[in-house]
Image (tube, rainbow, N blue to C red; front, side, top):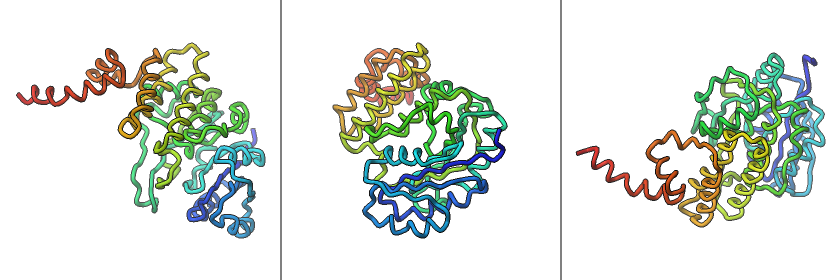
Length: 323
């Protein structure tokens, strides 16, 4: 085993000049020094290329490509990457200085394929964070397979941010390239494939990453195009895992359909009904079973109508309880 393997940090950038210096700086300040930083400018129009000379001097490998989307840029980064391990880093996010060192050390000691950590959500300053993700649903000291983790996503209702992962290149190669046709949830679809092939997953259970929430985040389901793209990604994830014949694993795509329904039901009722129908269609378990009374309505009437009936009756139940 190589005691000092090379780690490739791949940064796709599109019109992120405002944040890019801070992001690059967080990569350069890693306490683990055997790294290469690969910046892929995805056809930015905000003068991102003007920063290339400054980054070049610091050893960052900079490439400019015709705009093709974040997934396309990441694929181009993978083509250039020489590392034994891969860290994906969006152009507005930040790494804690010890992230690579601590995760790599843990992975090597456990012979793991992939490692994750909690992260902090922030807007402008990392010291003024909005959310701090502390994992408590699992014993994170226990090694798991990627499929075990996917089941936990479905049954315990949580997820892991792309920024949090450190992945062996061998596992990345098994998973294949990023799907350039998926605009929304491209990271969720991609890392579903990564986890599908991961035999050993470990957790470095401390905050090692900072996710910046911006107004124009691709994760926002604020258009039909984004909703359709994320819906198609869920179908692709479902197609991936169905051949496993593991009913518990179906809880994972089932949760995805539920979360889309929940996020869009007010603004996009037609698409919300579609997500609800697909939630009902999957004959697998759900984390909603833990919400005993709500689950009765969902089981009897389906997610869409069951939720409406449950909410309509809630005031009556509260009145009965008070009396």
